Amino acid sequence: DIVMTQSPDSLAVSLGERATINCKSSQSVLYSSNNNNYLAWYQQKPGQPPKLLISWASTRESGVPDRFSGSGSGTDFTLTISSLQAEDVAVYYCQQHYHVPITFGQGTRLEIK
Amino acid sequence: EVQLLESGGGLVQPGGSLRLSCAASGFTFNSYAMSWVRQAPGKGLEWVSAISGGGGSTYYADSVKGQFIISRDSSKNTLYLQMNSLRAEDTAVYFCAKAGAYSTGAPFDSWGQGTLVTVSS
Image (tube, rainbow over all chains, first blue to last red; front, side, top):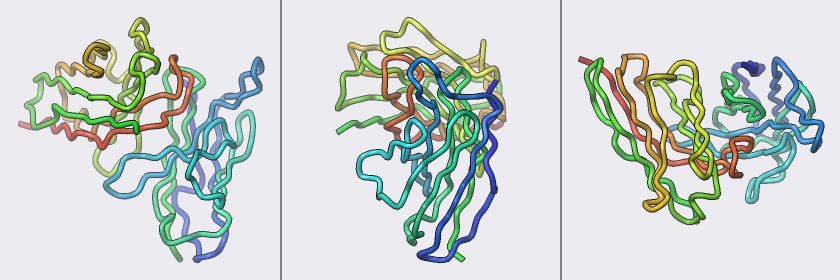
């Protein structure tokens, strides 16, 4: 199984500041035939289902503010929020959908400092 | 607009069974893989099972293999999860999720609100 490890487990950032969440996979999730990284980022607010933010490691979903960006390839990935807003308080998960079993990181709780 | 509505959760005794349903609308149901993902109280996300768009391929987490059965009915646009021999550790909110492609190799672009399953005597 591909193990997804996020860091940090929790993060407190001031409003307007940058937030960075890392995700590392135990094996590459880059498919060389199409050069796609099978890595997604989700945001989950309390009492809500997860919401897809970033697909294929760096493609922002429609309607997602451009302060959210994803980067990385192979085994190391990053979710960046360039200027934290109050509504960004949530738990963020990375997910690999390259191999079954599909696996998620343990989650990173993002709070306002 | 894609809508996924889960039902069938509730309180069940250990060893009991439950069948979850997920009614889908707003997209061509049999063109997309579907998954069940669960979240134990206060915990993270755990993928449980997936099924391809046509239903011909099914996949399970080791933790539920031989215990749960995923299926879909394209005539009813509904996804199912038959859960047998339930244990306390199966207690969770169960979400259905739509993949962005026919096969499982795509992110989950839509999620239901979830249904709570509580296994307790």
